[in-house]
Length: 105
Image (cartoon, rainbow, N blue to C red):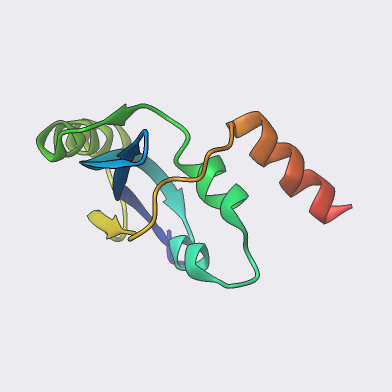
């Protein structure tokens, strides 16, 4: 049976006060990441998965991902970078999880 898991680095534009300041990187270990781009899923799923620490350095994000891989031991898809052209949604994990729960009721 397939683990269908990986460690993913999400790269999004860092827009601060309306000015592009480069990129932000978030790291997560998850399964079924292909669902992220499903048009039926909203931003709340992205926030729920990638709500951890944020870094402005791709090198630091890779260090975090590599450490995560070492701790987990095995992931089917290794480490991958996902790039989005829009800033990360402005929503807390609590708000995102609540919205997900409400959509399932």
